[in-house]
Length: 321
Image 1: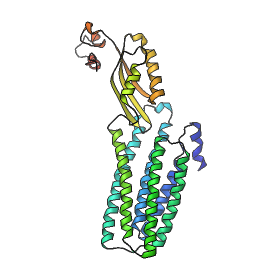
Image 2: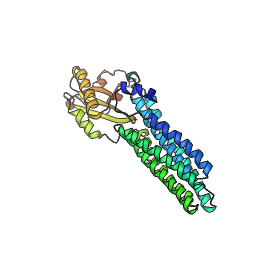
Image 3: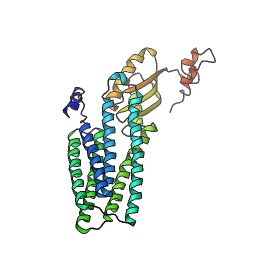
Image 4: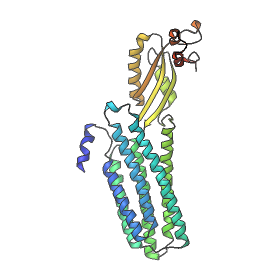
């Protein structure tokens, strides 16, 4: 696996490599799925389903960190960042289908219990538990970016799922009480549902172009207003491009166009330093005293032709907040 690690160090992030944990989990999910089908255990099958959902979460985190490391020429390429969001949405919907299947199957089996090979279930689920512990250790070693913290949370859920499958195997092995298998698979499907709803909430937050959770838009506006020669900030928008990248656009009111280059540099630097916002689009406006008119901005003075849409840039800037 060392081949995959070379390019990580060149970009010196504190992003742990998520590729190896991803492959481990995906690989073992396949083993569990086959094992569940072979032993007749729904608990193992549903734990495999849970591991698949976690492998997808890890894949997202990995794609996210890979996109974040792309060179600057792709800085403004929305397509890649949004791919992460689309994969997350598909993942969530897929998991809802998995849950529906598990619940349906569990109800069927509660009505007419099916034989399960308890010993083998215990063994496979125990190996799954070990794999999860290894992965959790690997993720914990890396410094936590938002993504690997989320991934770690998923793996903790996985640990619970594997424990549930071990319990199912043990109860069947020692007492022969078959209904414990579908019952515990229902418990695991609740775990999957919880992680799926959390994922869906994050996806919708990005798709609705909402302000990222970790940013307070009023703080940003005040910080921008404090920069020298900035007389006002209008039409401030902040949104997520992907889990790693935040974008901002705004109109900045100046007293003199000569100051723009300096103000632009200072604003860009401050937003990157303080708020980690690097996609910044700013538009300058010249400030006119209210005596001079109805708070129209300088562009309208140049618009002799009624068909020019210059005034669109300026509506309602005269009004203070």
